[in-house]
Amino acid sequence: MKKTIRIGTRDSELALWQAKTVKSKLENLGYTTQLVPVKSEGDLVLDTPLYEMGITGIFTKTLDVAMIKGTVDIAVHSMKDVPTQLPTGIVQTAVLERASSEDILVTKTEIDFEKPCTIATGSLRRQAQWLNRYPHHKVVDLRGNVNTRLQKLNDNDWQGAIFAKAGLQRINLLPENFIELNWMLPAPAQGAMVVVALENDEFCKKATSKLNDSASEICTHIEREFLRTLEGGCTAPIGAFAEIIDDEVLFKGCLFSLDGQTKLEIEKKVLTSKHKNFGKDCAKFILNNGGAELMLSIKKQMK
Image (cartoon, rainbow, N blue to C red; front, side, top):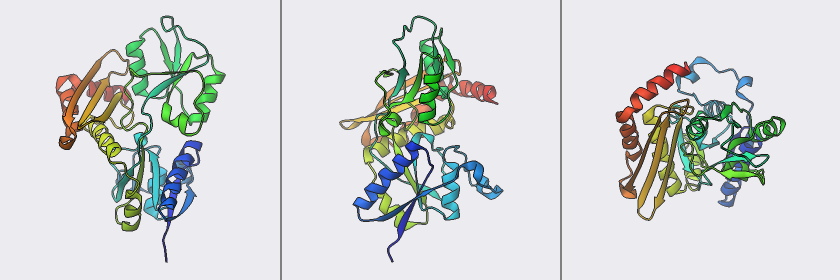
């Protein structure tokens, strides 16, 4: 009997778009699939052993638990939300071809950046980079899914809010008024979608591996290795972006203080064939040049 691949998904519009994209690609390859909406984390009883397995990602925990309990076979995530250390027994099987990695500023009117402004974002990385560039601006917290955040921008007297361009494009919500922030380094793996499966599920591993884009896999691996070595988790002010140009990988990485006043950065190239440990080496450069002390300071402030 042919196995039906159960695709676990949260019920936000973006999560459903991602899951449906993978569903369509698998079915085009001849596989039978089924979308399985999974209840939010608050609806699940998480016992101690599961926490001991290293499930830490606030956006991915629910689906990790569902996979381990056997109610879904695979999960699809925005890769930037996935902890760099996957839970025991769960493995990455594919990185789909990456979309835009850029951050954008969504605005309601034309902005004079020389004047005081209020900008909204729930990201420490975006906040730090914004305050580094515009120290006279105020940054306010913004949470919720894409639709909720756009509505909050509309309802408040903020001058703008920062979003990942790819997320808005995927669900056709990219507004007319936005500014591309090409000076802002994205979150590691921003714009990429990743598929994960159980380590012992050979059928699903083989099926989903056919969706893998090798260039996107290499670049996101370098970025996430940079993040993991800095020990930033998903919330520290860390930016990273790698791209393959001809036979080389160009990498840019940064670490900021929470207030944006301190900035540590690196830009380096390596042959694509020599990319192993490249992200780690770039992170060690940052750590050895003030980064270790800065990370300690950040962790103390976030306690």
